[in-house]
Length: 542
Ligand code: AMP
Image (tube, rainbow, N blue to C red; front, side):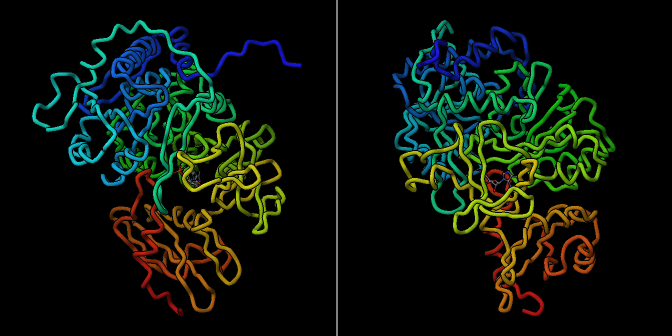
């Protein structure tokens, strides 16, 4: 017997219409590439999203056609999220930090028909436009009078002129909620990037999940600043979850340095922010250096890479800000777990709480997890056993776009490529990426654990631990360190710092100092490059 409730599809267009009706004057503030601050509201964003939908109809784009963007976080990008998907097309967010030949490869693979871009990226567009064989329309996210005349790009027009022709009176179409709404490519550290194709249904369910109190906890009382880019897994779904809850949004545009982010946090009275650890490192350095405080920010979501416990402690003890450590991946929309304490854990002493908060956290309802050994046998949730982390749920990938790579699932579970343990309370802790674990004499060393110790050293700005081949032990750890500006620390100081913090055999065999650690297009340390750079390095005793 079926239930007798209305069978209304979950569609992205409903989010912006809800926000416009119930939170019409809630603000969307953006730092523009022009440098100024732009202010709009959900009501205006909804009208302009409808104009986008009408203008795409006028171009003759069909259902399911892909529409690319190469843009920072800002109100126009936000309007495209809803106008493109709401009208039945697929928004494909391209990562502008990728090398131009990869941008071309991805745009061609996605078969983008239209490409929107911020003026900052005009040089990239000039380099790639003639090679993007499916793109017919190039639309610069600017006013008509800001459009340069002599670009040579065929079919170039300005966004404001393009939507300016439309009335904004538009009825969103209704269709199957399983239809695709957004496309995002994985970073492709090995082989070509693969497309992850989100559906309206998965996106709405994910937005509900993200907004839950034990996840990111979003509400109409919040003002949220996503530093995480809208070109990286839809800014962790925050634009959708913000529209669902009516939270005020603050978009930082291209200015992601500590000073610019801090100024926005203060002037817009931001209550929570979200981003990768490298961004918060810049912010913390800025506030420390200038002896500043956060007047309004109470929470910050940090994920994308392991957040060092020293950072969680600094935010909490020095600035009164709770770090919500979160884990996920492009294939998971992306949110999988978020670290929030349970009731009984609120009574623990601050150090015991910190040990929990440093974990990647508990699954959001909708995400099932398991850990398995090399034979695929499920491991216990005892906080000790660690194995391959598998996930499943309604916002987790079933297949890649165009079936690249074949069936990725194992018995219906998606293997994340991460190695983790899960404690009896359900708190998951990533030990490593399976490719990055250091296998020493039959035992595993977690590169994240070794990095976390180094990151607590006062002279260390950034640290990466990689495996080097070893004749006796197979592999041994090498620590690569960037010192803080002006700070002194020798190899011996750093190695001495490990005493009593990890088992003796886990202490790195050597430390090398570098000016910078290579970061990928999404701000993660590129260990593949580091391994390449140090492959000839001789460890003492090797
Ligand atoms: P991406 O799909 O580019 O977002 O990368 C996903 C991968 O980033 C995951 O599989 C993890 O290896 C890593 N990752 C994301 N969040 C965390 C976290 N909080 N701690 C450790 N690794 C993380």
